[in-house]
Length: 112
Length: 119
Image (cartoon, rainbow over all chains, first blue to last red; front, side, top):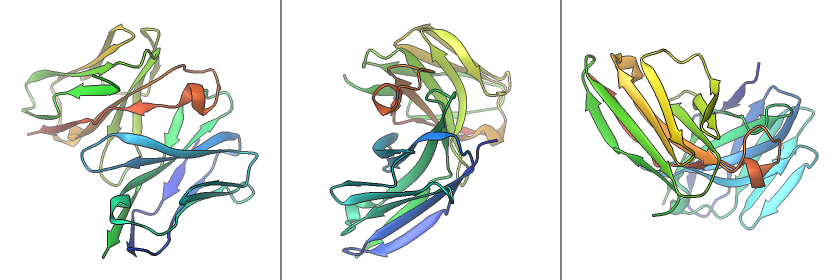
């Protein structure tokens, strides 16, 4: 079955880079997503990567995909206090349509 | 109002109560979802409705009863809940479902959730 794993917590200092990691098990993943959940809010799509890509950059965000190791990471450059949130990794798979399998979420805390 | 809205935002209920959660989407989407979010656990998909028809029931106990009267509204009726059902219940919608259309079609838009506490 599908399984997506993330570490639960990450703490960084303001201005540093944050790297949030995710591993997944389904080799037929088509898209991999990063969602952000701010306190008291629902999940919001941050970025995504197609499974035939190995990197995608969008302003301060860099997504790296190692398909061989089934490892996905999200790097946030120059992390700000407004980046404090829970970050969810999710995958969708061939034949699964847009049924997403989510991880536990990583709570990012940005300290001054 | 835009996006996906959920009411109530907070709900406290006893195990013998009956209550309902409401979700409304103003995006013209065709698919709607219920998720359960518990601390330190992956987000759990509960139900999916596509064009008002239930297409997924992820082995959810019968004390949770969904209802989708039209593509814009989704309800979750609750009765005889247990304390372990306490969680954040999230609603989401997407343009399509099962189309493998990629993020443009498949992207799910989430509501803010209902924080449920069962005493």
